[in-house]
Image 1 (cartoon, rainbow, N blue to C red):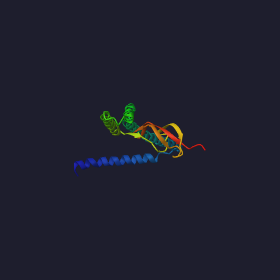
Image 2: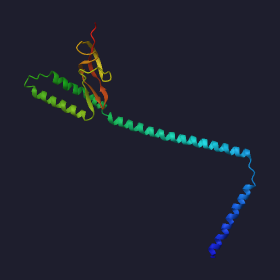
Image 3: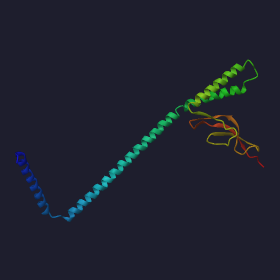
Length: 193
């Protein structure tokens, strides 16, 4: 036997002796039922508190996830509708260009180049705003939709169904699906019998 083995052997004997003494001392202990009941109550309280803390942690994680989603939606809406004020200011310019084309004397040869310039400017403006999600609402002949149309008057008309747009006084516009300006329309109503 080497010195190292001899040195380890007494340590193992000491461990065994300690274990035996612990076992012996445990055998001599009398268990008080009141103490056991108290420990069980403390365990139940600790388990209950741990479950409450786990529930709070799960709720906190869920709340943070909801907050993150809400913030992402707010940022998306801000990007999507950031141009709303700009578009609202630009709509009267587009309306004026359209009115210019409506009242222009197309038979006058000296005004034709000017009319062509206004037409090209209007087409360019319409295509430019369309790139940013702006679309015209021109509901001629469609059913009246209070979400997109503003009824300026109602006229009896037997030729079309009731609540049909029979005239558009001013086009409406929407930006990425949201109405920026409703279309001003004249709506049909059933004739009085």
